Image 1 (cartoon, rainbow, N blue to C red):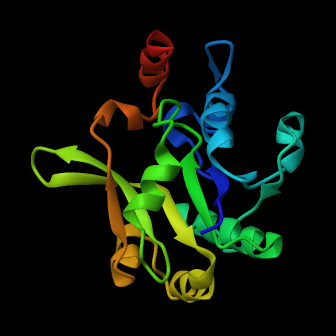
Image 2 (cartoon, helix red, strand yellow):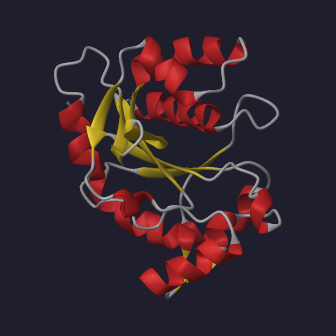
Length: 200
């Protein structure tokens, strides 16, 4: 299987941070987004950013900016679809997504997702971590997605589906288990940002 393309999901509205682009908030020597780029770029064949609104605000990153094709903030699946449509234009077979507000995700995210989906006709896997109550907790913005299922996803979104795991379960999506829950720590509030700064 060819190396997947990477898509950073930054299409959310960041309401708990007072709106705006969470990914552009400062962290360490850069921003949340630059931390995510630094982790994902070495693992993928190419990189794009899923974000809505004026793409010019990300111009200095030098990445393609993909807007949702589904109207009205349809959640992460709309960003996945935008990424799959872009990947299809590039002749790629799959994408791996990462969230723009999760700066410490594993540096072996892509190989472990690929391993989890090994042997599947349409490789589909989500990152997961151990969870005392549920056994595992899935991280729906961190996944491997096959270009071959993009039209199925488009139909599902058009039909009102918004929950990631409902769609992945429909296609027997697998889990890639990562031992460290803290790796998927995401920044939702100003307090989280201060915690992330301490972790840098």
